[in-house]
Length: 159
Image 1: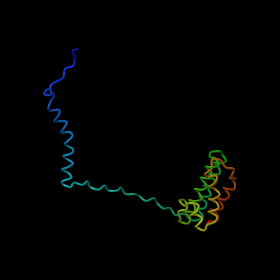
Image 2 (image 1 turned 30 degrees about the vertical axis):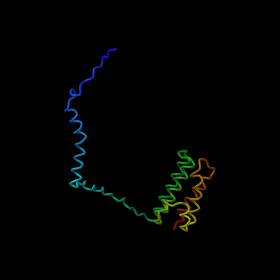
Image 3 (image 1 turned 45 degrees about the vertical axis):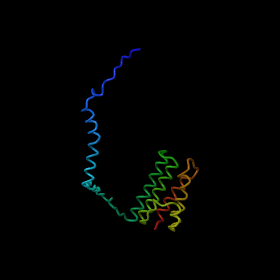
Image 4 (image 1 turned 135 degrees about the horizontal axis):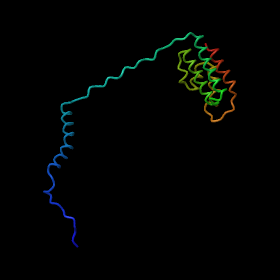
């Protein structure tokens, strides 16, 4: 049975294509070896300068009124059904922690409940502990009005 495929002789392939292929593979390797031999190192990257955030100092009464206003905003959003009970407690917890952090220069916004207990501020500890259940539960029957009162009380009595 005769076949229609004829094999080409080896000499019929172009030698130049083979040389180009080998050069494309070998050339980067040769360049890398030469650079290593002359100990070329990239110049170190200069880090971009970081601009510090401006520190704004508030008077204690001004700070209190600002954060009490934030609590009122959360209460308004909750009353108008723009946020649910869980989100209201998340916002209240954030506001109380931020206020205490700015008023006392202690990072209470990054502390766990156990670490807050060690601060010796029972009003803050009790309030944050009160917020934990509705803050992390999918559904809660917590009295939101009591939570608003507790958050305001921490800010009013913070020393």
